[in-house]
Length: 507
Image (cartoon, one colour):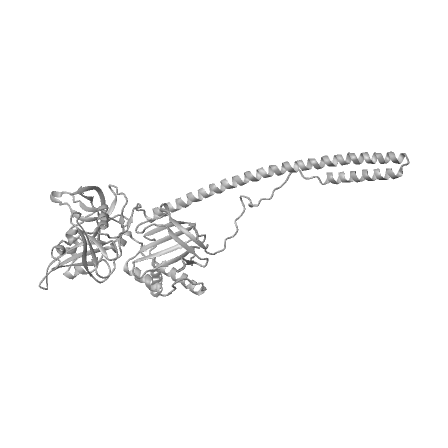
């Protein structure tokens, strides 16, 4: 019984879904501790630290006052960066500093850190915000040695609300209620999607029971500083939606598109029916005219035939047999032709051929292949959850066998969509790109993962080394199996979902 229970628990453990993707945890990967170490005659005589956040794989933003000692004493004070993951710390150097804005840009000399995006949209009073960093009071409670300050660990998060925006000495500041302390300086204030809204820089004193408030340098000041430093960065201006909200909006947009398509089809069907009815009326008018003309002609021929027959009888009574035969034959022939014309008169009702198949005609069954051709795919913000990526148009060239852009092989999944899961070596993000078989809907799901999950995904990816495109059924089957295995290692929901609408483009 015990063995059976253990087996059931093992199976349950294997089938449990991966932990849910958390945007704040994803942003935490970009947060670092910034340390300054003062040396004198080979000995450490001073130590300081603050927080920072990566805005490129090698460059970090922090407060100017965090690195002030390194600026004043460059020969004696060393800069270092301690990431939130991994086992190493890195040396750093100063790139740019703005003491008026209290911002600095530093660069690590080795290693890479997942960069964060800056939110450029509007902020409202009461918006939820989260402070990330390394508060000194937490360090005092948990650190047991100086080595703890240079060991990678997850930053502390503190939730609060945005109060308002105020100018302090000419610099736009976000006033918020997320609890921070010394050590948080230079760390980010992020929204619920993990995007940088500001850089924490100061707190109010809480004397005599006063409620504490925190100050963060506003995102617009940060972007100006980075632009002045010629530092590229990523901005996202769309509102922060939960994936459930994005899915609901996606369904609503699809329903609206379906209703619009149904209305357009109904209009086309109504126009086609009107055209058919008009053609039918004209055809019936023509058929009735033809019927009446045929009957009239039959009547005329019958009368002439009867007169000819009467003339034949008259000639017969006069013993003029030759003329009697001619007149009688002509009369009989005309009467016969009249009878034939009358019997074969057209119907008064006519049926026209329907080349469209009618409004209820069933479409031809589509072949189960990926529609080939060149597409230009445009983002649908109303159907997307955008957190970290740019949303420029995406050109997609598809071959029927699933080769995309001439270099990436897609495989058909159980849902009918063609997909490729990309697991890079130098970025902590797994991307699932997929397109429907008709080539109308292109989607990009991004999972911003911790180091352990990324390692697992890379191990699974290493099992099938399919580079480029292939028509080999065995290779395609192996790719599909591998992608199913990678999906099972991912969280249930992505951090970002980009939905594109595709149109046919010129070759």
